[in-house]
Amino acid sequence: MAISEAEAIIMEVLWRSSPRSAEEILAEVGPQQGWQEGTVKSLLNRLLKKKAVKAERDGRRYLYAPRLPREQYVSQESKGLLDRLFGGRVAPLVAHFSEQRKLSKKDIAELKKLLQELDDEQP
Amino acid sequence: MAISEAEAIIMEVLWRSSPRSAEEILAEVGPQQGWQEGTVKSLLNRLLKKKAVKAERDGRRYLYAPRLPREQYVSQESKGLLDRLFGGRVAPLVAHFSEQRKLSKKDIAELKKLLQELDDEQP
DNA sequence: AATTAATGTTTACACGCGTAAACGAATACC
DNA sequence: GGTATTCGTTTACGCGTGTAAACATTAATT
Image (cartoon, rainbow over all chains, first blue to last red):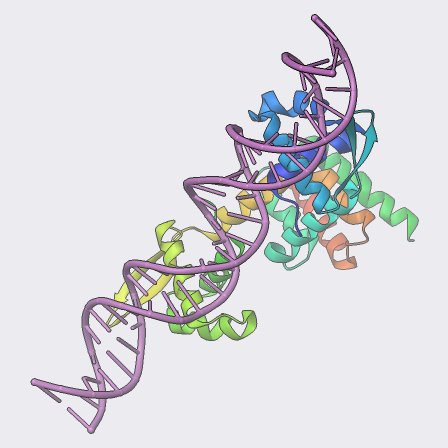
């Protein structure tokens, strides 16, 4: 089953650094999102049920860590969007951002470099 | 309120060509998605409520057409993903697809051309 | 005019999600 | 050892979604 938006926020915390206790997660994400303790606990339990995180006992509490790698999540999400909206092709996606003026100087420089490297490795 | 996945499928039909009757939409999308008539009608009504489509009477039935432009929808969705997963920057997104070997020759050629054009227009 | 066919509108229902409160168990303190 | 505290687990509840069935209305046919 898919990871929901609220769940993904918890995952991001764990991807940044893990393992972490529920309390630590709450401390990082609660104020920002306006979430109470119970909310974080519920989300963690749903993520456990979905096998997206694992929990390891540490004394009286648990420490949580991702089981699903971020890379895999990002891949699924990105591919989904690409397929649904751009016929699965990357160039039209970039063209779209270009038209929306969402390409920064830095982006452009990096893209050039990236393409250059692709040429180099496959002559 | 956001447009759901099922609703987006209806929207794609209307974006391709509109106005269309519910029957025409069903004909195009029903077999593919395994949707009955009632399903399409419900989705159309929800889209009406969300002001994403408009309906114009045509005799005994309605003809439906998008009110939300595809470009706007695509922008929202794309920006959402970019912000959530890539810190709002395009280059890392492309790098991701590159690592996943999702860049076709054609993509690469088009990206080069795109970058070339950006240089030209802003010397 | 009464019946049938075609459309749209209302209602339904199970399920996931966001958001927690309530409950229970284990540990720490008095 | 009894009580307070700290965690985790269970239950809750309203809302949107996917998927339709049921109902209402209007137009066509007999």
